[in-house]
Length: 112
Image 1 (cartoon, helix red, strand yellow):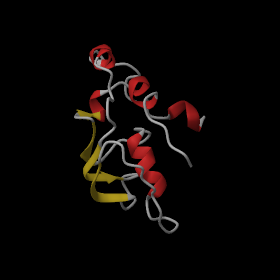
Image 2 (tube, rainbow, N blue to C red):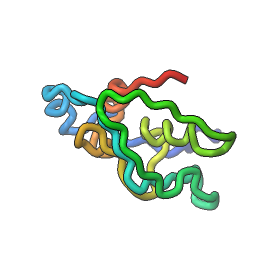
Image 3 (cartoon, helix red, strand yellow):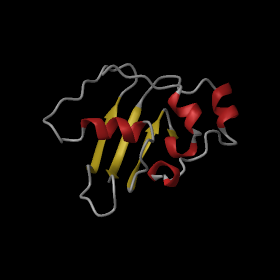
Image 4 (tube, one colour):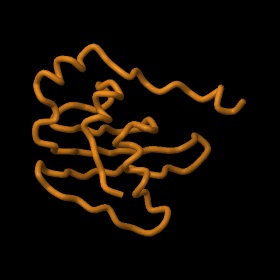
């Protein structure tokens, strides 16, 4: 019964997806987190709190840290598995909240 009452994710496709796809997004892969705050539930403290960083196009990045430091939360925010409480994530000039989930998720890969 719990799974029948889950919140619905954002739209799988959005009107601008076809235009973005025609432009070959993402062309370079630059990622920018700006003041990103994410919580798993409203009553819990933020898993990510006002995180800002830039990954330039072509860079290889490793995320390391202690247990509970937010490594997995960064990926969950990037794939929009959980909505942000604040801030934005931009890939090649496009805010990922403006993309359909299919368009976003099929263009990103990571190595665990």
